[in-house]
Length: 124
Image 1 (tube, rainbow, N blue to C red):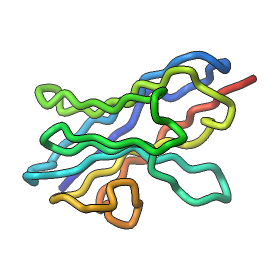
Image 2: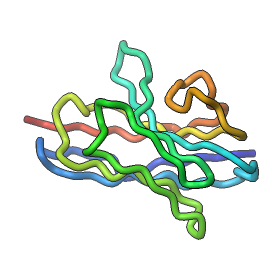
Image 3: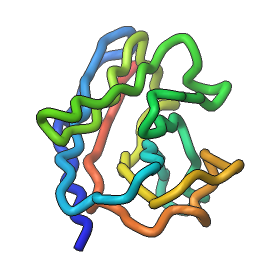
């Protein structure tokens, strides 16, 4: 059973930084993809960044150049370093995982496993 547990959310002023972590257990697929999504109440959950088991990664335009996705295989942890945060980055952030590769890495429909989310609030 795959389990994902996010942490690291909080409140920060615009221009600040946060690092989100996602503890991963039970993900034995090879290859696999993992991603960070975010959702504002009443809106669609949108993909922000994806990383594959071989290290390939991609970003949504809205976070490109400000956010960095990474993973530490030894610690079974996925990270999202968020810099130059803006008020519009305020959302619940979720990590997600799937076995195998999909050509739609930022589409929520292709992910089977989800964490419970961690809230990020950016004030102006």
